[in-house]
Length: 515
Image (cartoon, rainbow, N blue to C red):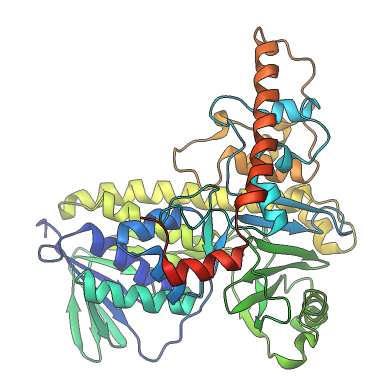
């Protein structure tokens, strides 16, 4: 078969399946390229992935969803980055990884001047972006007068994953021409060349030309049918478990404008604020602690963060996972997206952005013939192998920079054998220079050099730069001082004029944004 592929079959609903269906349904005229999603009526969704990157704004716009409707139907809130606590020493220290780039990032590397003390003695994030002050004050990143998906300060979202999947499903079926089949797959049939020919379901066979595996951890097509190996990363990132609860707001109903990541002796705790509840979970390594040993950590955190009864009113949900990814993601006429491709602890909310990037790549590179599919698959595999390697490297960075010595968990995370060689080499290099554009390999990097700066200098990494011998250093210093003054002025202005987070959400849902 070398004709033009005209039927895309997605196996699995949930956030990944319906996000892919929405992107492809918006990309193609479904009268010429049909999109069918098969969803099991008996398999529950995992329900992970409540945090997004700013890329979700453009994805929702591409799909054709109104931001007001999204906020309302998904109980969503605006996320301006991540607030880290207790990661360095475990003694209350904090730092931010905000979504807004350092001011003037395209023209000058303010990190160079901050390291030399030219910008004062404030923390790195507070010196280079007004988003620090806005996050500290709990304010929204925009005003109601700013149009949908536009922003004053960059943001992603916190969302209810179940509600998000339901909204995407209704929109894809009703507005984008996606066919929805509720059925259980009982078998897979193949062509002579090894391609998948059809998925046999209890409602009958469904043939296709390209099959997208969004079947979750089970990885029915890529893992079970094709036996594509799983590459575990447990030796690098130890966490393989989480205890999760959903907590209603107490007397303080303020909605956090960042994901909160609080380290504990054997892992860390996420805290994600939605409009109607918080999602809280303790991530840990089963090789270093049992679920029973982690429950007191979670209980203490809940009590200290406003839930007076702690865990007494909740039954934590235990989630087990093997950190890692498939050796390849596109094999024959099958491509895995979401949990079927791999999963790593949700430290920097990489799960949904990988789904977005995968869907976008499939849409943009959709093969015109079966013969071309091999070339597209090779390019896709190379791209996403590189992305997985960067995710693992970036997450490992947080552990390598930690100076906690209160448990074997933290000490072993810093042992050289567990650190990727590329990260070791970069850290050695960054001892003598600050990360900047030289370190970026792609225009759409998940973690650009600015992200590395925020983590490195938020966790007291030392770059010994020495004397600046550049010809235009005086001009550079003057520009750095001017940019710092602009950051201070913007911070003051935003603190006066930006609304509190919940107030903006309430008004946006009631009245909509401008435009």
